Structure formats: structure tokens, C-alpha cells
Image (cartoon, rainbow, N blue to C red; front, top):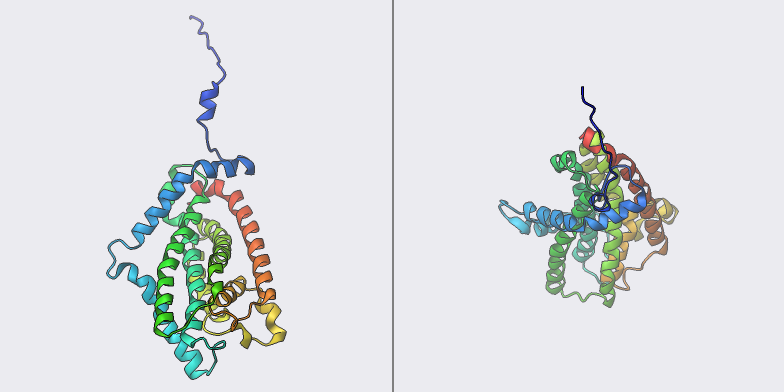
Length: 288
């Protein structure tokens, strides 16, 4: 029997350079991997945006029709029946729609981010890449919906002859806070959705409850002072109040308690959600 000589060679530097992402890498490398896969992020966001309105009856108009009909219902229930008043000279439909804008954005982004792993199960199980790209791209799609819905607000202000505050230029800041809140919560649910599919039923229920405990159809001023701190634990309170402060103007004062608690709770949600997502994402391909 002849002896076989096995030659062992160390991998060349060029071969090492080809390994961009591998499970279990440190958090520093993880952020670098996200940057290297930025083109995948853009492609997924564009794909989700085009698929959302493909082969639909009314297409992108649904983005406007849904909040408009909700505004009509809330105006009848809270203003006509419950006799709640608007803030200053702002018409009640404007008050409601300005609250619906960030809330609809939040619920759309949260729902899409939470289901992003399940919707892309084939991709997750076959190819390794930073999974954070999927919920993050889902939030970007919700931003596009927000821009379309904001166009209806401009139409409403023209029809109702309402002039917005000059502070309307700060709207992107509060939109960013809403996206931050949605992504932090979405990371939690996206990870839990992979292991426990029952969470897809929990999320719509939580959104339904949140619609009535958030200042969507009413002003935060109707909440008694003794409940304000507990009320401000809802991170969307600060976001919605911020939108009204920016658009309605001086008639809608900004509560620093609500804004501060919104920043604090959103930051905690994002930090813990990101950590949980990062730790569990290495098992997604096996579980999903």
C-alpha cells in the first residue's frame, strides 16, 4: 500500500476576505455586515413596496381610504356623540387625522416588521445574512405609506381652511421617533414569531387596544392629571402629541413628560429588542 502525502495549506488572505458574514460573530462585526449588505436592504424595501400594491383593486388609494374612513368614524364618536372638543381653532377632523398619521404608520411598520421573518422564511432558511435587514426594510416601506397619507392631510387643510404651524418642519423628527419605536417593538415580535406562531394573533389584538388607549381620536388633555405618568408609558403618546404640536401649533402644547417618557421607553424597547433579536437570530434558520 502506497503512502499518501496530505499537504495542509493555510487559507490565503483572499479566501478569508470572501467570508463576509458567519453566525456567532461579535456585535462589532455585525454592524459592519449590515453596512456591507446595504444593497440587499434597498432591494428588499423596493420589493416589498412594489408587491404591496401589485394586483390590488384600488392600489395605493387604500393607504388614503383607510385613515380617512377611520377619521370620519372617530369624529362622529368622539366629537358628535361624546362631545369632546378639539384643541384651539383646529377642526376636529384635523385633530383626529394628525393623530391617525403616526398611529397608522406605527401599526403598519410594527405589523410588517413582526411578520418579516415568516414572510421571508425561504430566504432565511437558505441564505445567511444579517436578519435585521428584514424588519428594518419593512419599516421603510411604512414610511412610503406615510408620505402618501400625508398628502390627504394637505387636502384636508385646504378644504377646511386650516393653516398649519411653521413647526410642521419638525414632523420628520417625530416620524423618526415613531419608526424607532416600531422597529424596537417589531424586533421583539419578529423573533418571537419565529418560535411561537401564536404571536401573529396577539399583534392585531394589541394594536386594536392601543388605538383606544393612545390619543388618536382625542386630545391628551382629557386625561386626568393623576393618570398622566401612567398614560405616558405608552411611547406613542409622545409621538402623537409631537405631531399635533408640530402641525396644529400653539393650540396643541407639547408635554415634555410625554415626549421624555416616549424617548425613554422607545430606547429601552429598542435596546432590549435588538439584543434579543441578535442573540436568537442564529437559530432562525433551524426553527423557521
